[in-house]
Image (cartoon, rainbow, N blue to C red; front, side, top):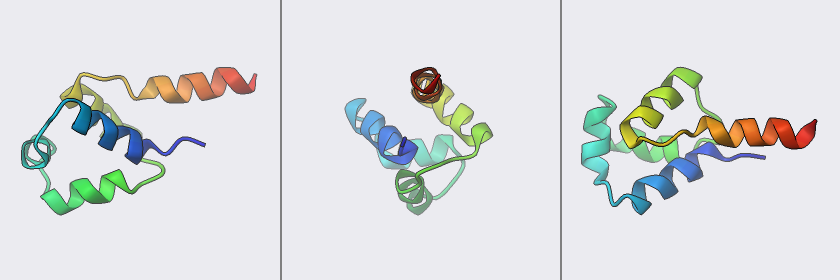
Length: 70
């Protein structure tokens, strides 16, 4: 099972992106960023926005999961 929030969190820290900058780009409060990190699933539109901001395709995790099952 994919825990997308943890994957997003890992990428943010890997890129050394300040949480306040990330929150500003998502037009939300810092506390909401930490809530995103704790989510196991996420809305696809939000995931697309996050992928664009971080320049990282998080949808690849779902493609891999799908291809591993079939």
